[in-house]
Image (cartoon, rainbow, N blue to C red; front, top):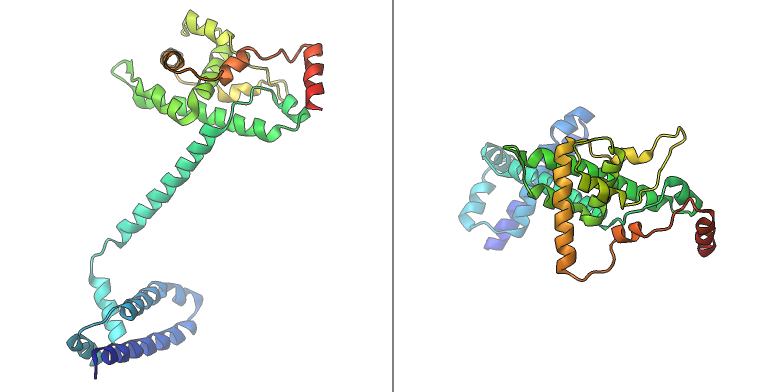
Length: 275
């Protein structure tokens, strides 16, 4: 008998053993089937391995002497320590990281929508408004997390700002911070310079059905003094980038020059352009 014939005969014997096990398993109650699901799967993998590999003549003959070689191999497999669970954990972490990266990418590519919900409703732009609002809230939460993570020894690490700007872009980060300072204009812990800068960013009031400003949803709730330090760092980074590169007008620059939507003439003109 050739080596191929020996391996084929062994495969056929183990296959028949698996078919018998399968028929028995099908007759078990659901709970019993679940309890043996792992064994069935591993036995299938053992057969698949034999299908793609050949044992030596002596190895094949040795297994053929067993009345249940498939069950014997499975019992030996169960006794071994493998990296099976480590591989599963690695897959879990990898998949979660992939989803997070996709979410970060989507948020970073979402443009800042500068108009209130009422304007978005009127102009059929609710999806853009909602996507931007979700990104604003996520950016606000990222700022709070970065401040918690990078504040130590009475200092705020510059990496806090870099972490958020890399994820959300300068435009959205500054927009969220400007909104925060405007909403907390009463707070003396924000520097006069940052307060004056925030006033240059026109952020439209966005009242809900009860008159509350929806913009409060993306107000940074970290310690105001640390938020002010964070804002100063981001502004400096923003200025350095503008000086180092000749770039197109940013969203913030456009916001600073956007029309006042409360003006009847300008509002009518915008509506005419939409039509």
